[in-house]
Amino acid sequence: MNYKNYQNARDAAWRLLIDMEIRELPVRTGEICRALGIPVRLYAPKGEGDGMSMMIGGRPTIFVSRNAPPARQRFTLAHELGHVLLGHVGRYELVNREPSAQDNQVEQAANVFASRLLAPACVLWGCGAKTAEEIAALCEISLPAAQYRAARMAELYRRDKFLTSPLERQVYLQFADYIAAHR
Image 1 (cartoon, rainbow, N blue to C red):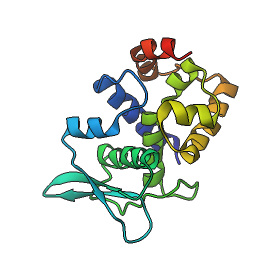
Image 2 (cartoon, rainbow, N blue to C red):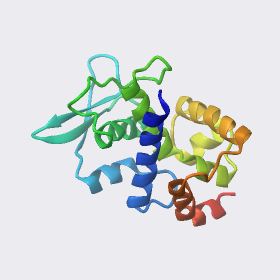
Image 3 (spheres, rainbow, N blue to C red):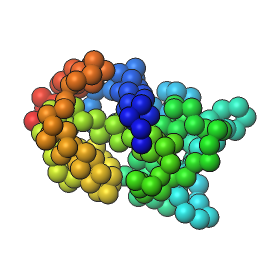
Image 4 (cartoon, rainbow, N blue to C red):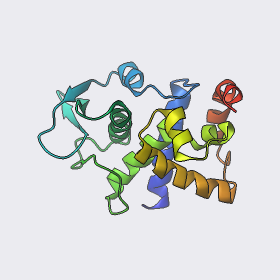
């Protein structure tokens, strides 16, 4: 994924955390969708995939598989919300499945958005969370999603790349009480 697309998705997640005044983990994706007026529907998929988003009556609507475990539903909802907020719905064919480096730019951007929304690096860093198990527990995401996030966090810890963006610093300050209680 090119850096500009990555940066746009990451910054969109941070702006949403800031605008919605979210101050603790786990991030409540259903509440965000309700506040934004985006309908969320459970459905039973006939094939692969845990979710989808589409325009219905001129409005984005998100569908999440009722068969997926709750932690997977949360990531799927965040992924689909990313498609909505990044302007993908109605413009691209969207497929929600386990992330892959071979995914197209649109799917990669939605995955970046979802992981940064549900597991913001600066909050994980502030709490000292490093392992996939710690991340999964704090963020209420699946272990596979937490493993992807833990791999990225390891790189950020190695490079000491935290609080470099004004948006990230704002997210960190917004979560300060939560971080202090979870160190």
